[in-house]
Length: 252
Image 1 (cartoon, helix red, strand yellow):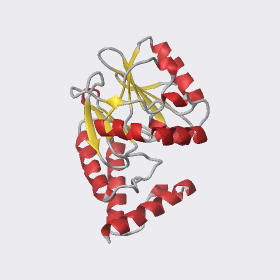
Image 2 (cartoon, rainbow, N blue to C red; image 1 turned 120 degrees about the vertical axis):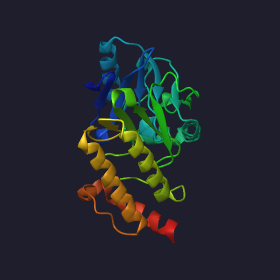
Image 3 (cartoon, rainbow, N blue to C red; image 1 turned 90 degrees about the horizontal axis):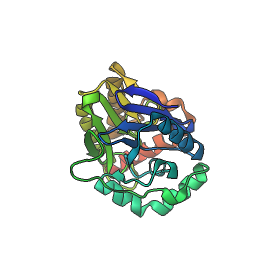
């Protein structure tokens, strides 16, 4: 079900890696941000949206990973946006994203994956301000809804995912540091943080998420094994090792 976290902002969380689909009310209707994750989730999200009684006018993908590129016919044949770089990357990776979706979830309309266009320069119809950066994935963007005190962070600032670097691109540690600085500035205007995966953060927890990820990235830069509360989750041990190895290669 949809949970309202601020004026005109709702979140629906999936059991799959605690993925958050976000519904934002804009001037002309609803914008679906990163809707997912399997066919059942998409149908239930459509039911929730129908109950709001407000038309869907657009979609937005925060970054071009398959689980953030999904759509369903019930949402309507409306424009789906990303940053210019993100839309291009999604187009280039569309076949791979379809394959990964088919392997990881069920009931997804594969033909609708990754059909994105660049967000217009004026940002419409997506409300708020884009906070674009190159951490985690090329063309990644958060959405700052300063008037509502909300930041949609994409795959950043999660309480269940460690900072995951993109092994295909150089100097991701610096890219991540820059991204955290930009998100930190945006966070000074909010009370509610919605990550792509994990729990919604409010109040002091927002600063705690930023501090934890800064400490993690700083450890990577120094070539140290990060000390992180999420280390105990076995399914994250591989990414930890990958992150550390990439950081050592970048610095060496």
